[in-house]
Amino acid sequence: MKTIALIPVLVLLGFQSAQAVTDTSCDVRGQVRTVEGQPVRAIVRWTDDRTGQSRVQQANERGRFHFIGVRPDGDGHQRIEVTAPGFEPQSRSGVPCPLGNLMRADITLERH
Image (cartoon, rainbow, N blue to C red; front, side, top):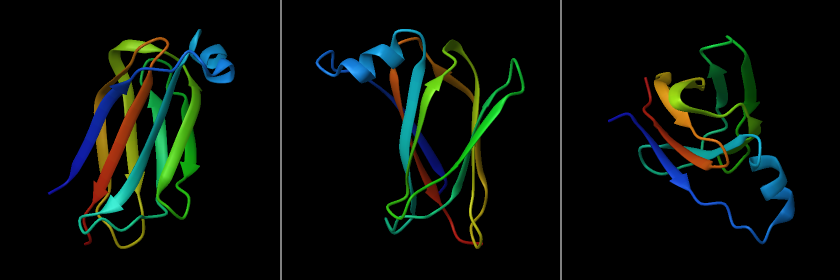
């Protein structure tokens, strides 16, 4: 089963650097794992469908990624795509990223 979980997380106001970023943007972080729970060093692409602009990162050895300062969009005009050799690609459109939020996007990949 392929899944992408998107969960809004409240930003703690005690962290000034996080607060400064989220005053005018949204952050997205998550982890890419196999069905068995193993981390995957996947390529993660975050795209704003209104502008066509994309940002790309490779997940680290723990499968984690973090996009800082994403253009906010509470209406779901964002898309996340994940690819890794030996795995089925994963994509989700209509992803909201409201102003000032830290969004969680955990992705589970299945092998070919």
